[in-house]
Picture 1 (cartoon, rainbow, N blue to C red):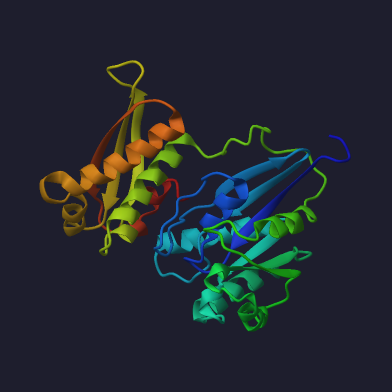
Picture 2 (cartoon, rainbow, N blue to C red):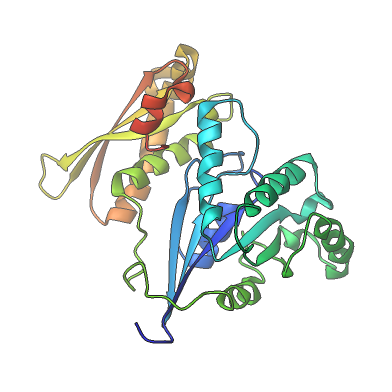
Length: 305
């Protein structure tokens, strides 16, 4: 390690559905976490690695900070807390189009602030106000910034548009100020350090969130059961299973004559092929596992624990 080699962790936190994953994807420069307009899309910590010369930033995309009565929800909250335990700085993300913190923002901040009490020294915290592009006159943002700044003490505030990639350079430059001297944790090739099977299962789940608009999405999870060469050696065979909690949910996901499952599989296969750079045969099945969100063995099997 030379004295100029730097590496650090930036935790990205906030209430559900404020664009944390979209922000991380933009900052890293490629898709590392799935996105959807539905809350609690992110169920586990996801690392996005960005290397700029001698500096490496590891963005930790976390599940939304919220209270939950399910074992899955409590597990997700614990993952977010673990990300805060050793981060070098934190980005607290909120939705500027809400004009002021709502109840969920305040719950997220209370959870965050209580976790910071366990730190010998609290890390620097930036307030990131997403969806700032909704305001053509940027002067309209001034009272919004003031409203959200009442949540706590921030080193600085950055109005951004994660979706459009607006005003991210000043935020990234501010992040670089707090990256400590350290050897790099990941190769400079910047490959996403997420297991391939986990990545594929998340792609499948993203397509469910995109296509299904009923009660199913948050009761669904996906797992890759098998990966092997296909009948054609150049093709990869992937068997994926989608777990749901009710028979009625299975019917919705399969659809009439299997049409919905085919749509999910087609969208997922195209993205998996793009990621893996090879033809894929995706064999999707749907199974009912009642109350899987409350079963520790299922959470372990799905990689949430």
